Length: 335
Image (cartoon, rainbow, N blue to C red; front, side, top):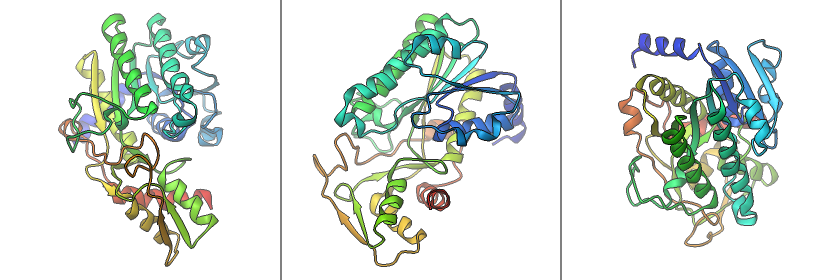
């Protein structure tokens, strides 16, 4: 990567006032840290349903930072949030795929309705015309091509979460071509690291804390997925937005993930090892609907990173390294 070019891009980014929806959450708070350290003016909108003020506490008294406790499901609060900002990073969402089984309306309201209100607010704004939206690998459903490129289709998500995120992408594209709101879409793999409050690593740690001798693993054990460390995720997001600010496109789509996969049983082994637990008995539940961990679980996920790699980005960690480092960090936070 050209270091001088990267520095020039970040200098350009620093001139913007940035809104981060969901900025008190896992990924959002790490993005806040990075942009604040780069000298940006940052506004965070978060309803604190899953995010926490402790994640952004160190910035609360900074004159370049503003926190707004608000909810994108209310259109008036979305309009207030975009006032006087130029760039929007939209990370507010309900990230738990499994909740769609019990209450389908949650993903509709938290993802689709909230994104619609944000886009409407941006349409009416004179300044806020560039959106980066955090999408997900689950929009691909059970892809038949591995690694899966951005142009893969048809897109047939198998979870309500994936369907709602695909709908958010479609809304963003339509607003780009109809109303001039430029949209950068980032399809994220499984992101792991400090401040995470859900996901397989977090779940395994909590289960082993409760019973150090036995670990239940959802599914038939054949699940293989790509895991991206939070540092690599933020680096990719900023690399992508800097290129997007320069290229003038209405819409750009990037996969954001590691360059490989890791199996769920290997993750279990790493977590047990990092907790210094010997002879843990792994118990597979057998899963549902063909061995899935839960309804809507995509058993095999590996995104192609060719497009982002060709754009000059490269992750520092593979999936196993990301899982190991995330486990070490989370153990310090949850023990």
